[in-house]
Image (cartoon, one colour):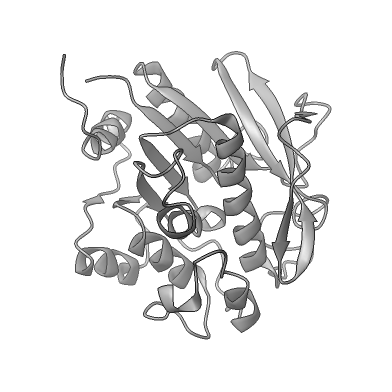
Length: 274
């Protein structure tokens, strides 16, 4: 197969955050796909727990400076990068003082889920896509991992459908066990509209309730395929994917899992053997 261009919109990854199954996959999957002679770009949020000095993050001025308007408020988009020398990878970080600086992933230090997690997902998805546009890079496949990436498929297929960077891209969403349980509520839903994206696009999935399951179903609706990242995915998400005719890659923790991911990505491209 010809080399693919794969964009990874990742929720978390070691060594930048504490080790977890999702954080390990966040590193291992892009690394494995790159080792299979593909070209990759990898994005992750600059969570507050990430130590910039220890991980040698630095701001990319030419990519930063844009303001994203969410809920009629300007939110500066800051792009930082770091290199993982051993993995031969460069990682892009999406940062913003309101949404990521001094804040954890899902809950505050008292265990309370952030009331603006939906807004944060909006900012992250739009921030990644605006940055990829500036890079003038057109991925064949876009892999979205976790709740923070769940709105990216919607924006790719609707708001950015005519953009040269994304008009031919296929999108795959990786779902997992729920990272949070509370309903974020109508305010976060009302922050989703952007450009030609309206609430009509998601009314069959959610109207006044937004939990992990609703976010994942929005992702599935606008993705070309679904990957089960663990064995705890809500069956409602899987059934929704099947009802939409979307191919589902079953959870696989075996030695061949990255080969299966690579084949799944191949199934969405038009590449043929030379």
